[in-house]
Structure formats: structure tokens, C-alpha cells
Length: 423
Image (cartoon, rainbow, N blue to C red; front, top):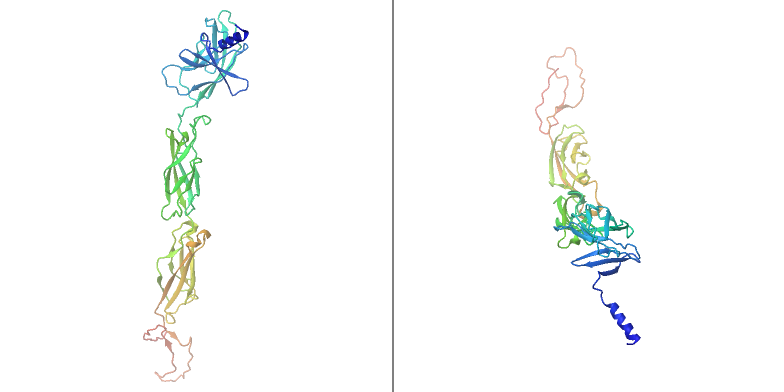
């Protein structure tokens, strides 16, 4: 056999698996220059801490939260290359939950969890491992620290901080106007899978409103939403984890949205002509009556100013705006005389005092009506032609002699007989 053949046979032998010993699987971890070692034992897979150059190799163990099996949940395996399998070594576990939550088989190094673990209570546990010689009680490996990290499962639904939100948006807002943002939180691990990735959708409130799936911002979805037609809306928003996919958990909240008023309605008189009456004897400043225009808006958007803009009695009457009732009060400006004029006609205008330029196209934001004022006759006393008379008479004048004449007239249109008396 040549030297070349000997070398070839040696290489073939070296490449064959050694079935008499534990099969060791190596892979690179995220840390440079560090190897993670797992031992495949009969009937069970597990992670292994392996001694290299008489030192522990360690890495994170991973454990699934909320385990529901009847047996203890297997975590992983500690192992030293000093272990000959004769039971001479003893594995010791200490640290977070050692001996209670986590137990170790001191002969094999197998670690188990004794109960269900909730990642939201504690996300990882830091423990220390040591291998000692049973006979001498001396460590065969230096104590080494390792971590058991709890893998998240989707066991928490998204929750909103408020069961009911209240919000408002001006009526007539353009489509896409932001109303309010609602945010749900999910206690699952945001760095692992989609368990905490929340997507928002609207369950109730369409087609008036929409919600942005990623942000939870609620926006208007219809143009020209009119408060005078409908003021209150109830919107139900759902937050669903797993990116909104089937099987995700969900939570809901209710948003009560009110449309606030804008000045999109002009004042309107209900009558084209209004009739009022006033006695001719009414003094200056007397209130004749009122006119009122109605406005479907509220607050300052419904405030109205009244004025006389035309007519044959503009110099005879005034109008005052009553702020608390939004009425126009007509008053007498000059003395009235039934015999001189019996009917006046006024043109009254009502105009909003706060006009929104955005809604000029809905205007004009004013209206007018005709007011006819009838002056009523009053029975007035006769009026003498003079305020005083002076007559001269002789002392011996006979009884019944006419010494002078006084004259009085009745100002009413229909004269009544006038009689005189001496006082």
C-alpha cells in the first residue's frame, strides 16, 4: 500500500460519523467568535453548554410562555466535556427562579420549568451554572451565567385607555379632516413576530368617517356633513393584532363625535309682509312691535342685526336689535298723526353679524321683509283757535247781548258736536 493510499484511507475514516459518542451540532451565534452548542440526545433535543479549553460555552435558552402541557416544560441541557457519563459530576443551578421555577437534573444537566410562565410578567431570567465533582466537591468548570429568554405568544388583545372617547369636528369639513386619534396598546412582545402589531378598522360609523389602519386617526369621509341635519355620530373602532390578520386578537372602543356649528345658514323671515298697529297718541320711544328672522345656526353664528333700509317711514320709526332674543324692536321716532297719515311701509333687513368667508357661496347671509304700520285714530279733544280771548263790554249791557265769538275745532276726521261751558 502506498503512502498516498494510506493518507486517503485515513481521511475517509476521519469523515465518518462517530456513533459511539454524543453528536455535537455547532452554529454561529450573533456574537462574534462565539459558538452555540446543542446536544442531540435520545428522544429529546436541547441546548448544551459545552466546555472548550476548560471553559463554559453559554448562550440564551428560549422558552415558550403559557405552556399548557401536563409535564414540566423542557428548557435545555447543561453539559461539560468532563462528564464521562459515570455519574461522577453534579450540575448545580442558581439565580432567578432556580429550584422553584427552574429545576435541574443534577446528573444529566437537563433543565425544566415547573409552571406556566408569562412573558408580560418577566421577559427573561438570569441563572448561573456549575459542574462539580461529586467525590471532591470541587468544580470541574468555572461558574458561568446564562439567560433563559421567554418567547412571546399572542396571548394579549389590544386595549384602549378609554372605553368611550368624545370628539368634535366642524360641520361642512372637507373629506379627510382629522377628528381624533385613538391608540391601543398590546402587552405582547413588539420585537417578536406580529403579536403586538396593531391594525385599526372601523366597525360602525361608515360612510361618515374612516380610520387610518396604521395610526388610528379618525377622519371625515363624506363632504358637506350638515349639523342641522344630524349632529351626533357614534363610531366604533377595532384594534386587531397580528397585523390585522385572521387569528389575531382584538379590542374595541367607542368614539362619540359631535359636529360643531359653522355659519352656513342665512337668517330667514317666515313672512314676506308683517302688519303692526300703533295709536297716534303713542309718545316717542314707544315700542310698536317686533320682527324676528330665524337662523338654523347656533351661538354667534346665529346672531342677527336688524335695520330699516327703505320705505316711506324711515324718518318716523327706529328699530333696535334685542340681543338676548335676537328680535328687532320697532319704536316711534316722531309724533304720529292719524289725520295726517294713516299707513307707513318699511323694508326691514336682518343680517348675520359673523359671516364665514368659506361659505359666501351659500349666501347672501341676510333677508328682508315688509312691515306695514297702521296708525290708529284716538278721540282727541277740541282745539280752540286761540289760546285766549279778550272782549270789552259796557257795564249796562243788556242780558243776552253778544260780546264776542270763540272758535274750536275737532281734530278727528269725523267731527263730533262741540259744546262749551262756562267755568
